Length: 345
Image (cartoon, rainbow, N blue to C red; front, side, top):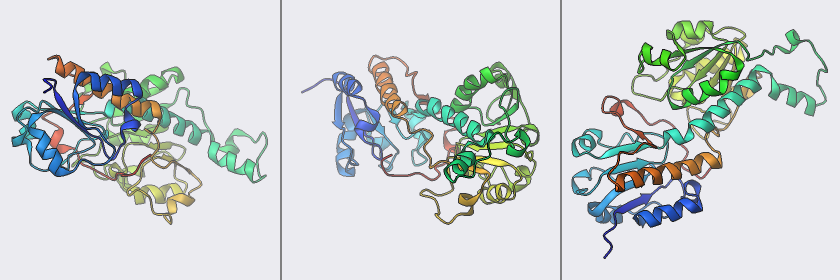
């Protein structure tokens, strides 16, 4: 009988090959005894049977119910979805010394790059010009004021939420010499200034920024945080980039204002997914639309597996995990689940 730690690996809705490159599978199986490790969801009966001896659980959520009292050997729950499962009893985890770790940092680089790409596409009107060229209606060497485009260089940029994605995006924006401001009620002004962004009230940020990145994590407190009233403060020539969750925006108000030409928007996330095929945002000439693809780069998905194995290695060796994001007792119960596709990317 093996004396190695047993780890339940049940990543559905993701597949094993989605998140574990071949070398990481080898590392994983050399490190621990993998229980399940298949693409299909682990049957609940098999999970509950394996749980008492499990050192860790790697999963995309927590669909197993109130079973933590049976997890006598459990030291960590590592989630590969990028979010925080609201069904999990965090208080019990903290009481029992069970670490809850999220793969959110693995996505930060990919989402930050996509946010920058969406900002450039929108500020330079690339999608509309592409359509015009394909239709034979392009305007060769039209004046800048006719095109309505602008440069990112030197512009005032606002971050609504400044977590993993915001920090990576700040680094990408540094060569543009932008004036960076942030609104994040979960971070102190001193912390934001140490990260080289200026803390700003939400209203002032929306009213004064030429480029607005909506990056806030969905919580029980920020549904429709960007209300119609606040969205009406956005400058007429500004671009709003939505890549976190539609939960934080009054999406119908956003749609109406973009359709009215009040400002432009670049959107990667929606109130429901797949999104209503008849929704009017699909017809908005001032919108650049992407079907929730910001984090879906193979490198980002394999980064999940690499970080999971890195932290399992630390835990097995009696060291604190450093590669995934640990749940904070002050914040864990305030996260909420929003729309999520449960199909392969």
